Amino acid sequence: MTDIFTLDAEVRTDLGKGASRRLRHANKVPAILYGEGKDPVSLTLEHRHVFRAQEEEAFYSHVLTLNVDGEKVECLLKDMQRHPFKPLVMHLDFLRVDATHDIHTNVPVHFINEEAVAKKGAVLAHHINEIAITCLPGKLPEFIEVDCADLEVGQTLHLSDVKLPEGVTSDELAKGEDHDQAVVTANAPKGGSDDEEAAEEVATEE
Image 1 (cartoon, rainbow, N blue to C red):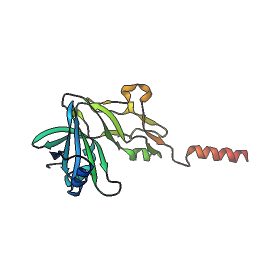
Image 2: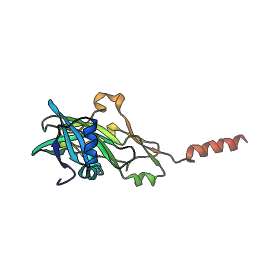
Image 3: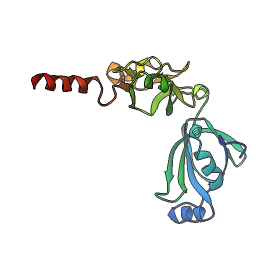
Image 4: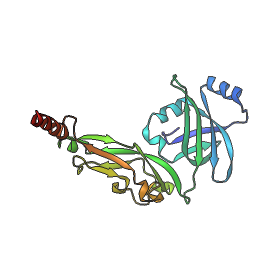
């Protein structure tokens, strides 16, 4: 493996739960590669390479290259099964991609300039941590930045307020205005103006 986005894989013909168990005992990970109208292919990967790669956020939202018995295949990681309590990857699902075909996937959100909102006395509430997008594989961003610098107390940023990279569209917004999800809200701190007003009203009544 040259980097976290390139993994060596071997085609496996020994299938079933028993075979998968034997692979894991040999420090290998069973996987499947499917998509693009081709037959699914069962694969085997080295666990140490997979485990290193899965520790990086970009691994989950980047076009990967699988070296399958000498053939390079571009794909996305679509699913990963982990052991419930051991540091083990149990199974991987990869989806083939074609440079000329749009892909639908989720990419993580990175919130920036949050300290600017904190200085205004607000407390940020993140409503989502990833965005469903459509784009060509070559346009796939590793993450999407949400700039919080101009948020005022009580204001909410929605998907329609997020600037997406060129060639990238939101799957939710494509469904219509009713799907314009809230992304982040600048809330007044607890014990803020609302509480103070309530306390003043009580004092007046007394």
